[in-house]
View 1 (tube, rainbow, N blue to C red):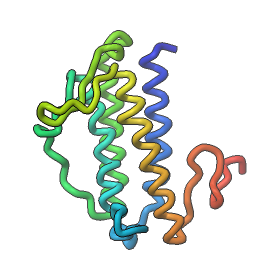
View 2 (tube, rainbow, N blue to C red):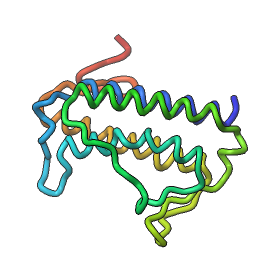
View 3 (cartoon, one colour):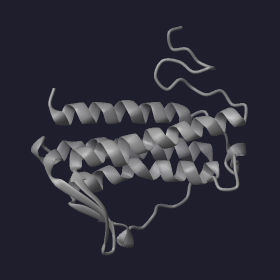
Length: 166
């Protein structure tokens, strides 16, 4: 397997797991927040839905300047959440068609105006900003589900509510 094949497969696997979690979300908990300092579920899943949409920008450019970024329209229900996320994931997967293994070694910078957050290889950005970031927030969504007595789908092998071993 090439480096491109490895990161693409990991991306697909983790996004599919996130879809399973999103499919458990219900409209009635969109305004739920576990703490006054926490995001509402709607804010959290809207943020998560954006993450795969950044892949094309990572693979097709050398930087992202948040001063020039226009956020997408807000999602307000569970049906649109799943559909939008799936669409963003499919677009991200297609973006991999245009790159080579060498492209993954090119540097990419995240900044806001003159402030640079980091400069990493595109491969590292896919791991850190896209995949790991998604996993982090997916765990938060699982907690929101649990706190609302909604069954939490298994992420890898099992959860308290679902055992993929059968």
